[in-house]
Length: 481
Ligand code: F0G
Image 1 (tube, rainbow, N blue to C red):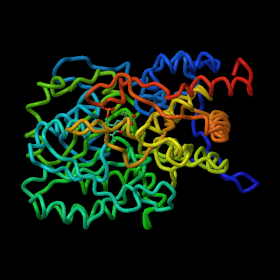
Image 2 (tube, helix red, strand yellow):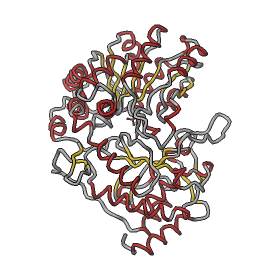
Image 3 (tube, helix red, strand yellow):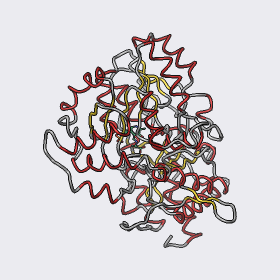
Image 4 (cartoon, rainbow, N blue to C red):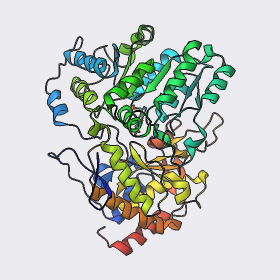
């Protein structure tokens, strides 16, 4: 929630109180330099002890509620027939309106099951935009991911409210070209992650369904960030200003044929699932669940997480929960913008996104500007963000680098974890870095895994800029900062 102050400005206001805290430490710049060198300039390879604010992701890092923690104490660990599963199934029925549930250990496990069941060699899978794990699974199954976003989606300076929408003409043309029988399904990702957490509208979702249903193609929603997308629909789509988050989620699900999700985001747990009302889809996937995940009533999740997920699904429909990170992000992005730092607008869900191509335009895409900037942000602040650019794209079949559409540094805002002073600190250090941006150079791989290379790849700073940047920072702020 946001609240208006008497001077007319708006601030995000916490509709909760903090009763358990976790200590963090700000390692000095020298130590941070050693840590990022050891991590091969890959923020995934840093250790928590070296991180001040962990803005890598909101995945599995949202604050849980007292009710979620309490529910975990009631877990039924029965291998088969666990009562915890039936509680989750009831919550899914109540909020999504879906009667069939397949639990999975996390979102990518749900993607694996969908790929295994529906994506065949030569198929196309149209979507608004890919997510890294989605693309990896659909590619491995022999399918081709087609991103059919609108022209505005990749414009980082925009005021278009639904940059996660699909372009309907492109969708029709793609299906006509491939033939409907060669389309696995159409996938719409809620609060589209890799283009800056941008939502789709209900109008767009409805139009997609209307087009593909007569062709016998089904509609899949990646609902990992479903409550945030519903929050944006309430704020931005005419006619929904007074609708509840619960009604909007229900409407999304009534249009979609199937929803899968990572429970680590909107649901504030660790786990995943697939849910649908389509018996045919459910029955096609079901045999693979015990093969890859676990028995039908736990699917690789712990019973404790299943209990917490049942609570989380209901809680994510509360307005102040659905908007907790969106409103904080709006404030954070506003702070960065006011300091002239190039960010993605409008502010979306899950994170504030810094546009590396505008921040350090002197670093060519072949030297991974988003990766370099993520490392530089860590060096100058102790804040760990995530590269969402060309490092996050794997090489093509010929071994060539695939330049990413966007080069973003994602500074994730897990729900109810950070405070306003954290955002003010982050904006201040980013401003210092922006003023010293010419010191940031490019990166080069020294170790590169063949798939999802961003997780484990190691790089080096071309020309040794990392040490010089740390030295300049220390000169200005002292040895302890
Ligand atoms: N779909 C979306 C939209 C996601 O954002 C993620 C994960 C997944 C699927 C995969 O789910 O991690 O539970 O296996 N996103 C995380 C992130 C990793 O940091 O944005 P998972």
